[in-house]
Image (tube, rainbow, N blue to C red):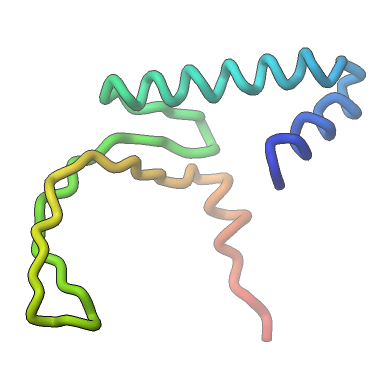
Amino acid sequence: MTKRDLVMRIAKETGLIQQDVFAVLQKTLDYIVESLAKGESVEFRNFGVFEVRIRKSRIGRNPNKPTHVVTIPTRKVVKFKMGRIMKALVMKPVKS
């Protein structure tokens, strides 16, 4: 599902104009990114939590040239932890 698909679906179900739905959705995403950039976590009950973690520096190697060692610097990454309801719906066992 793309952002466009989401906007169209919300507009259809609510009767709102697509431009208004897009503006609200975009502003929501902007605020989420802004909070994460500040190092704050973003929590949506029963959906999940976005949080910033520090990934330590480590040694990397090119598989084609294993003797060539590259140091990968410390950096921030965003981690997402699923909420209880999402986990129950997404993590259902696959029937073969």
